[in-house]
Each structure stands twice: as structure tokens, then as C-alpha cells.
Image (cartoon, rainbow, N blue to C red; front, side, top):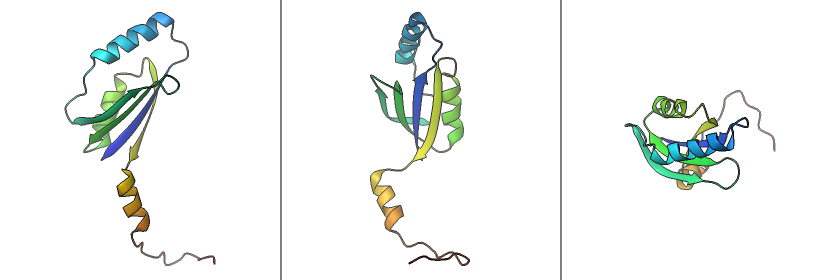
Length: 102
């Protein structure tokens, strides 16, 4: 399963803390159970965007806890564009109690 994480520096950090966090991030490695698909350092907000593949969200959350001192973090499950198109175009079972508007 794919997960996208958006990381925004906490607003109270000093310039020195931001520099130290960037250096720490550059040295950091992803733990076992996470396969890095992409990591972007953005010149804007959020400052870091990661895409990882993992069997379950627990390993993603564990990695995120490492960074809670410097980042506000949001993680969401995701699908590729091809997977999304397949989900959108595949037949869906009709809800028995739903009302259909035409």
C-alpha cells in the first residue's frame, strides 16, 4: 500500500533548529518495512513530501514519530493514477437502500 506524507516545519523553530533538522533528515534512513518511492524537499510548504510503500500504516507512523519534534505531519493512503482509474471505472455494487437522482 502507498502512503503519502506531508511534513511542515513547526512554526516555533529557530533558524539553527531548522538547519539541524535538515542535516538530520539528510542522514536519516528509512526503517525496515518501508520502501521509499520518492522524497521531495520543497521550497515552500510542506517542506518535505514522501511517498512510501508499506504493508500497513503502523511502520509509517513509527517513522513519523521520529520527526514530531520538528514537523507537523499528515499521512494519507494513496493509489497510483492507474489504480485510481481502475477503481473509478470498475462496476460498483448498487446500494440497496440508496436513492438514485437522475
